[in-house]
Image (cartoon, rainbow, N blue to C red):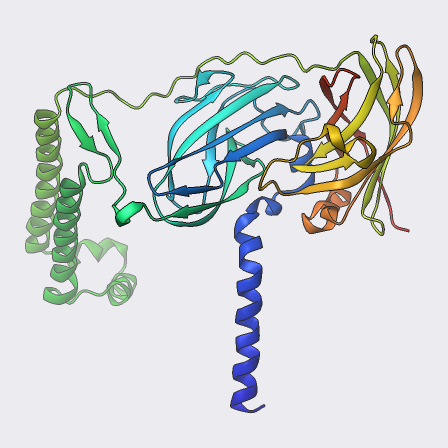
Length: 415
C-alpha cells in the first residue's frame, strides 16, 4: 500500500471518529445496562432552557421523575441516599441552585419508589462551546442514573469578559470563587514538589541507590542483615525530612486557623423530601405479557385495562429508558420540547385508543422504532432477570394528563 493510500485511509478513520464523537460524548448513558435504564429512574418532562446562552448566563433544567417500583433487587435503591446533580463534559457550568419538590438539594436525601418528584437545577455557563447537559441522580453504592439531556450552545460574553463567580461571605466580604484561595494552593504545591524532589535527589543522586539494585542486594544478603544498608546518615536525613513535613503541616494548619477563624464544615446530613402521589386517573392496568422482537425492534405489551373513573381516557405515549414512544392518533396531547431528543413521534400503536368509563378491555401496546437499536436497548434480552418497566401516559376529555408505571416479565422474539 502506498503512503498516499495509507494517509487517505487514516484521514477517513479520523473523519469517521469526528462524525461519531458528537454522539459518543452526548450519550455516555448508553453504556449503562438496558435493564438498568428501564427499571431504575423514569425521567420525563425534562426541559432545558435556554438552548442558547452566553458565558455568565444561567441555564435552567426542569423535569419530573419516578423511582421505579420494578427496581432490580440486586441494586441499591433510592430509599437510602441520593444526590441531585447535572452532567456536563467537564467544569463548563457551575451549579447555582438545585431542588426537588421545592426542597433545596444542598445535601443528600432519600426517595421512595413509586412516588412522583419534580426537580429544578439552575446552572451558570463558564466556558463557551457546545455541550450536552443532563440531570443526574447519584445513588449511594449504585452509581449515577442519567436523565435525558439537550444540546446547549454557549457563546462568549459581550466584550469577551472573563467569567466571574462573585459571592458575599457571612462576614460581608465579596470574593470570586474562580480565583479565591488559589495562591496558597500554588504555594503549597511548590513546597511539596521541592521536598519530594529533594528526597529523590538524596537517594538516587547522592546515595546512588536505585530501587531494583537495592532490592537485589537485600535478597543476596538476607533479611537479617538488611538493616545494615541503612547508615547513620540515612537515619538523620530521613528524620529531618519527616520532621520538616510535620512542621509544614502544623504550620499550614495554624496559618489557616488564624486567617479563617470562622469556618463551617461540609454538611453530610440528609434532608427529607416528600414525594407526590402518581395521578393514575382511575385507570387500572394489568400487564399480561410482553415480548421484544429483535427483527422489528419493537416491544409489544398485552395488557388488560379498566377505567374506574367518570371520563373516557385516551392513551398518548409510553416512556422507557428516556425514550418517548408517542401515539400518532393522540399526538396533539404530547408536547415535544425544543431541542428534545430520543422521541419516536409515531412510535406507539394502540389497539384501543379510548377507554370509556367503567369499561374493561384488552389493549395491545406496541412501541416500535429504530431508537431501540440506536440507544442499545436490545441488550435487555441478555439480562438474567428479563423484565421491563416504563411510564404510560393518557388523557381525559378535559385535557388532564394522568400516568402510571407499568412493567413485568419480557420474552424475546427472534423472528
